[in-house]
Amino acid sequence: MVSVLVDACGWAALIDAELNLDDAMNRVVGQAELMVLECVHRELDMLSQQRKGLLLSLLESRSEKIPDLDGMTHPDEMLVTLSDSKGWPVLTVDRGLKERLISSGGSYIEVTSGRFLRLVEV
Image (tube, rainbow, N blue to C red; front, side, top):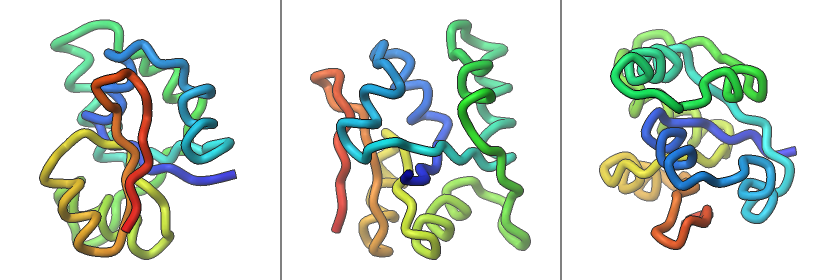
């Protein structure tokens, strides 16, 4: 089983593309264990107040919530650090975060325009 860190915009993009979570993840990494930082969970809660249909109950039932990293305040900083130290890819569509992940030797999973997931590694 592969652990995958979830970024708020990555989850929203996955839902917007109407992808089946299990099928899409199986195609790129096999069976995935979703990991959600507390700060990302808060971001998604705030986002869900502005728009409906984010399926947060699905994410909560299928993921493990992990505590924010001490000494860090920005979710992207935490995601890059965890991806680097644990070797976990990040589900994201954020261009800046993807660049930071690649430059730090990390990897990411993105939702493509063809409504598929794609794993990008160094």
